[in-house]
Length: 331
Image (cartoon, rainbow, N blue to C red):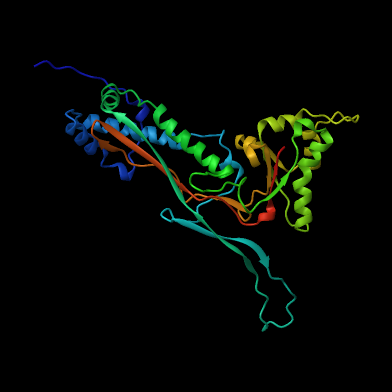
């Protein structure tokens, strides 16, 4: 009988452990492969299982800086993972504090009153397939599984979530911040045809309006707009002797305000026009409700492949105080 030795390099799997819900995987993979007329022994099945777990860990920890909703908007998970709806109050504070003259007196009660809104929670998902050939190559050569499939799955999931958070999803009926019915919307004319003074007036308009409408209670601390409109503000100069551009002048007047670009603002206004959002990054004002963030499910051996499903659940954006979010569209 001819025998041979095979060296398998598993350095990239050092210290990797299977999750509790994946402990069945080596046996399941071996069984699935045998049912397909192929065979991986127990060690090879374990190698493939560890490869999948290693890849899963890398994908879950992968940063996505180009999708900014998770950094620029408050995130919350108040609904349970299995909930079908999320109910909240579009609120106004009611109540007062008064001086206590008699400690036996009832104190005035502070309530939050307003319209009850019920938002549907929608589920989104996608899958990755690894063929028998992929499994054999990973198990027998010790080479890492091709990451492109899982990375692509995570990428489209993050892109979908980011879009929902900002501009919603028409197919599922979810609202984003920019198209939420409870925000304040102002319409202006396009910035490229305006002077620096006119663009500056538009940029400060949400601050003036919120201060006026709420008697100074609300004031934005974050502005998001498209990259092209940020460049317009940066490259449109005042005609006075200062040499300031619009962005420089704005930052001098509002030094504590975060200004960032979001791709969805390029078409975030009515009719696909350019838009700018001004809001306070405060979970008491607005948030993105996500009962189930992106999750990779345990692999499933099926016929000649192993399938890895991923899913997420979200209710989109919720706005608790309408006067705290202003959209400027048409810019």
